Image (cartoon, one colour):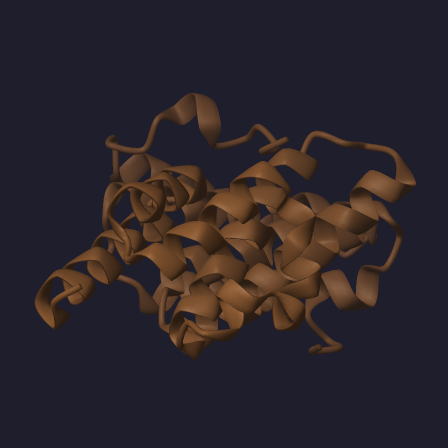
Amino acid sequence: MAKNSKDELKKEVYEYLRKGLPLMALDRIRSAARDDLKMAAEKLLKNPTVIQEIQEIQEIQEIDDEWKDLLSLIYFSHFSLITSEMMSLEGLASWSVASLNAAKLARKLGIPELEARTISNAAKALSLVNMPERANGVSRG
Amino acid sequence: MGYLEADKVYRSLERTADNLRGLVSNLNDFGSFCIEQERFGEAEKYLNEAFELVKKNPRIPSAQTFLPRF
């Protein structure tokens, strides 16, 4: 894939993430990326838990670090969205972990709109599991 | 990371309708959280600011301002 179209694809993926549309970002990668990246995205779409084994998957090992971070961010921001309606203790814990991971990656990749939204969600999840110091932001982590 | 951090990031962003909605939502959540913690002075400050922002910016749908985003 030519560098320009790769940059163009990254720009589109960033824009979807900025708007809070992680699945649209994943779908865009699936339809337009080069083969290795497309395979990684398809694996992620079929089974989101592969992100936990990101270092062990051949297709993902061969793609660059920014794409790895983008795929991880897609996973965590989508997981943050779907767990936001789970009010069990386990659901709230998943919501806070996914949101914090998404916030850290959004900060690393320079997507402050997504960073703010996911930090706020993490704070809400933490306050609901009765961790007020962390929700308040006294303990940064 | 928490409400304060989210507040800081929201304030650093351009004041688009979406970003304002996020800021107001975070202020409301933070205000509610402060009430739960019996920090009523702080709660009043955050909730009043959210209310003022909504008054000054009719682009923010008012239905979303005092509802938790679950």
